[in-house]
Length: 85
Image (tube, rainbow, N blue to C red; front, side, top):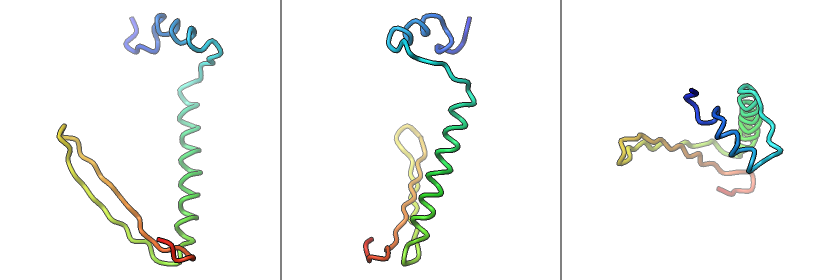
């Protein structure tokens, strides 16, 4: 018996019923695509921020939720060449 619901025959039937054109991919495919997307977005953000006319100020906030989960928020503030915040 499989521990993952995505590997059962029932799940396969449900997926095929809703999307008969589904093509399975290996586990490495999403990892590879997400890694590429992360790199592209990071480079785009770096180029955008580095073109700022002023220094970048980072603000950090850390808090705990009701379910004892910790959160962190990072906000970057800067002024661009058109003096827009």
